[in-house]
Each structure stands twice: as C-alpha cells, then as structure tokens.
Image 1 (cartoon, rainbow over the protein chains, first blue to last red):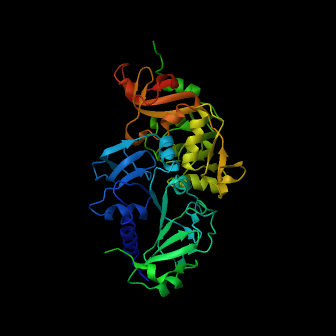
Image 2: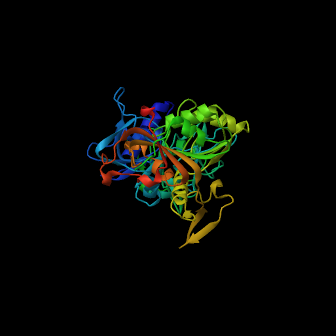
Image 3: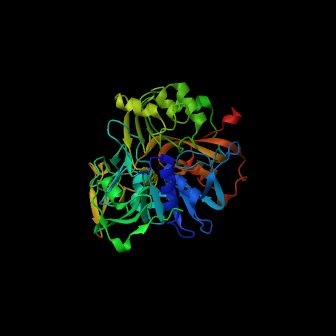
Amino acid sequence: MIEDVNLAKTIIAKRIAREFKNNQLVNLGIGLPTMVTNYIPKDINVIFQSENGIIGMGPVAELAKENREITNAGGAYVTVMPYGCYFDSATSFALIRGKHVEYTVLGALEVDQEGSLSNWIIPGKKVPGMGGAMDLVVGAKNVIVSTLHTERGRSKILKKCKLPLTAKHVVNMIVTELAVFKVTSGGLFLSEYNKDSSIEEIRANTEADFIVVEEDLKVMDID
Amino acid sequence: MFNKIISKEEISDLLKDDMTIMIGGFIACGTPERLIDIVLEKGVKNLTIIANDTAFSDRGLGRLITLRQVSHVIVSHIGTNPETGRQMFEGDLKVDLVPQGTLVERIRCGGSGLGGFLTPTGVGTIVEEGKQKITIDGVDYLLEMPIRAELALIYGSIVDKAGNVVYNATTRNFNPLMAMAADTVIVEAQKLVDIGEIQPELVMTPSPLITHIYAPEKQ
C-alpha cells in the first residue's frame, strides 16, 4: 500500500488528468478532484466549468490579487480564462443535466461495483448536503470517482453502498492510487494497476467483486 | 418616472415574523449583505429562508441563523456553516436539502408560470421520497414543484434607477431567478447608475421585476 496520502492523491490526480481530450468541458469537485488541474498535459486545453456559473475557469487567484466577485463552487477566489464566460445557476444546471458536460470528477464516501455513489451525507454525523453533486453525476456524460483506495484500512469500493446514495448506477470509472476500474453492465473491470502494487494487493483491499482480463490489463500512466 | 429607491426604515417596515424570504448568493458571493443587516437589526423571527446554501456563521445569510431568526431553510448545502448543522441536530432548525439544479429550477418554475418539471436528478435516492415518479421514453424522472417566496432579497452589481440589473462575474448565481419568483423583490445595488447608463442588451434582470432598490452608499 502507499501510506503517504499526499503521494496517493497525486497519483490519482495525475492519472485522471490523462483522461481528457482537447477542448472538452469538465467539472471538477472540491478537494482531491481539483488537484487534477495541476497535471493536465501541456498540449491539451481543458475547459473547466464551475457550477456556480463559470465556463472557462482558470487557476485559483493569487494572494492579494483576488477579485471577490469571482469564486468557484467551493467559495474560493479563482480566475477566469480570456475565453471564459458567466451565467446564472439555472443555465449552469441546464448545461449539466443537458449532457453538455463531458466529464465530472467527484470524491466518494462509498462507491460500489454497480456504479452507485454515496458522497453527500453520513446520517446523524455529517450532513453537508448534496450541493450540485446529484445533478452532476446524473447529467455529465462521464462520471469519474476519485478516491483513496481505503480509509482506515477499509475498502472504499464496495459490493453495495450502505450510505444514502447520491445517485444509482451512474459511475463510469473509479481511479484510486492502486488501480483504475471501469463500471460496465457486465460488472466492475480492473483496467489498470499501479506498477508499485499488484493484483493480489488490490484484491486484498477491495470489497467489491471485479473482473480481470489479463490481456486488457494495463499499467497506470502516471509518470 | 421611477420611484423605486427605498430607505433602510422602509425596508425594515416590510419585514415580518414568519416570512418566507429568498436570498441570492452562492457561499456569500453575490449576497445582499447590507439587506441582511436590516433583517438582523429588525430582529424578525421564525423565518423560512430559500437560498443556495447557508454561507458562514459570520458572513452571508448564515448570520441570521447564528442569531436564531430562522426556523426553516430550503437549501442545497450547509457544509460551510457548522452552526446550521448544530441547530438542525438540536431540533431548532428544519433543514430541507434539495439538489442544487432542482432548487434553482423550482425557483425558475415559480417565477415562470410553470406547474413543475421532470428531472432525473434524485431518482433512486432519498430525494425521491414522497414524490411522483414519471417514466418518459423509458427514463425515470421525479416531478418537482415550483417554489415562490413573499420576499426576495437580491444583489446587483450595477443597477439603474429604473431597476435594470447587471450582475458581475459569479455574483449572478441565483439572483436573477429569485427576482422572478417573489411577490416583492428588493435589490441591493452595489453601484446605482442613472437610466441609460446600462446598455440595454446587457441587462440581465429587466426593471419591472424589481420592486425596490436599496443603495447602501446613498444612505
């Protein structure tokens, strides 16, 4: 296992960053998904949406150069690319539900082998609310879950989510520091593994059932 | 010709206990802070607030929660304001969590003469509880209902004296939708300009939607 959490998160962000094609519209969740912006290949231009009303979001604003009228969906001060634009929240979610967003990348409390996701509530303990997450996972063309493989030794990838769902059967891809999984109607497939890990280690740390097709299995591209 | 500019005292007179109020803004960006000051000062209680989120305990509409003026919030997110969660767990504050896209569309419907809409968001989750499910071309949707308020407090970056509004950058968010979905709409003008100073093509909220203009700088 990779014990260093920052290294683990960097691996996840690097791998997800390789997923996008030129000029695709992408929405990144707050936290780990936001790290993906640091590793987008130089020859690829990704257009970022922020659901509070931006297309063409740029990097976080430099200290003392913040414009208080430009924030992201987490409330942080950000910048906007020269080609960017703003719109209201109804337009923003029409873009999301209307399948105009190519990818959404979100974190998970739990994700399961059927592509269901829980990431908005731990009843009685932590109730932040769903914000835009339920709309994003239902509306985006591709849903990528970015998550550490385990938390306190327990698998984050389950046979079935136990917490209240964000949405049912919506996740296409799960990226952890150890592996990349694809969710299909035929089940969960291990498509890539970290060369510093092994199929045995991944099996030992994954509650979900997954299928391995040896000839299709690749090493995660994170160099 | 237009006489929409109103004073702090006149706004204070419009506020009542038990009111349902929409408040614009997204995590305190594009929030009418000076209008919230007036609600705080008046001390009205038992309010129902419809907004995207409850911001922070000391910034945005979260200040109304801190002073326990609110008994019910209809929002998409409370994670930035631990005080909301605390009052909810203590049973003092009713919190309805609504997916953000559904919340804003309910407001849009409320202001657009529509009887509701069908959304795939929330199907198969606890959000669908108590709602009618309708299948169209093999896809399940939830029937979501319109929502309105007695009063909307919104923020405008540039407002002319007729009530035409322009919102800068991400301050727009829920503001133009709320401007259509309340019986009385008060805009807090960050910058008040004369009629004719805003290019008509750039107006984001047309003037008849605005009942009153509050210009804190003129007070």
